[in-house]
Length: 285
Image 1 (cartoon, rainbow, N blue to C red):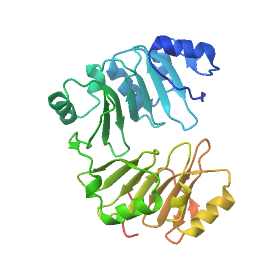
Image 2 (tube, one colour):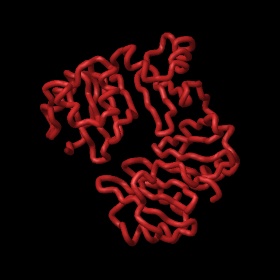
Image 3 (cartoon, helix red, strand yellow):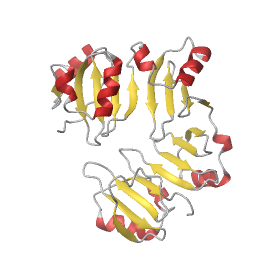
């Protein structure tokens, strides 16, 4: 089942007025049980815990599932059912939504930001949390909820050099380091990079609409980039992950291509199912 992506903004009333003026191929559902038939179990369990009714389901071309609740809160899930973003749309946060954050993060917010309303919560694939407060203040927390200050000044010199060389026209929105001394850098353009403790590249997640910046392609083997340009000229590179054999490359959706390349850029094979998310071999490159 696929629906056209629709941007959800503000309250239910505003959402309804927007639908009236735009073409929409989404599907209203009569009740939660009907809706659950189209969702992964992980997403169902999350939604059940929120104790509110579902209003609308939308699935975009990138396979992100967006659920608009009747109280106006929007929740985005990956196609495997893991939640990634909760947008309050100016609604007050409920205890059930707040409980999606680790208890340590909730305690920090209660003690240090008692007068600031939460506007958005995001969770990364490494289970790090980003909380956007009233006034667009952004806070970051580890997978266990520990507050993570902006650590841009702590980035290893190799990572800093990479950013200066290939992203000179972009700016660092925030840089965080986790308990394993792995660095995540979010850029203003929407591109996210991950580095190991020495500053070696581990992963890049490009801006969804623009793909991997052309300048950064020069950081990877030319054979790999030439193969992608020749064999998949209509695709943009969305994600590159370092592996022990070389590189995992994924293109944009719909119909994404997932390929494996050697350290020198030679094409190896189509990626195996689940290979993107396994942790094999991000060392030694």
